[in-house]
Image: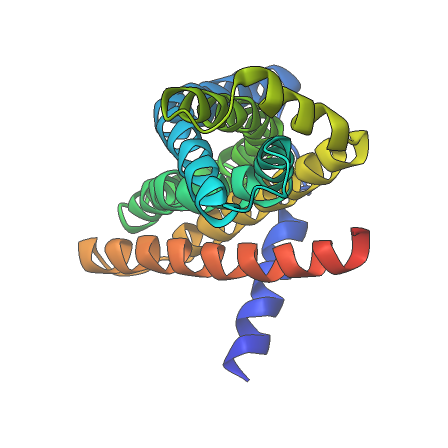
Length: 245
């Protein structure tokens, strides 16, 4: 029964985001601030993860394909497809769930326990719309952009690792990558990115919004936000793969 209670409260929370919206200029300003916080603040960690994931995938794929009967260009095919389909969107969003999700939950949770949200509601402001909706929309815009960057950097990391380790030349890698490329693969990756972005931002905001107590409860809400977001990302990853692939 606890699951249905929290799920119902989450649905009501999402519905409340769209009731009594704030003025457009206020909303636009907050959304651009959130886009900068979520997007620009995450480029560094996305770059590091993507490059090394692509490099490691190339090395491990080459280690398993030791037969001389298999063309080396197949390494480029495997690395590029796996990066676009799974590694870039899923691993990157799991990391972003820890970075962005904990930040959102702790920020809104602190505002709740310090009664700042109560003050907004007393002034007649829809606190969920004012505080949460800009974060959700900003995440759904910026995180797919980060995933596109992660795909590019992951494949680039694979190319660099293949060349530096003497596994295969750049031309062979690109031959395999181009030969298997499909536009739907990028569409599927972006669909996953938008879905994961909504999960990260909405679940984390929900946990923070219903935080009551003090500093200990804020930390607990932040932990729950990361754990629940990660689980839902993996679950929705399977559902999307079943529906679209």
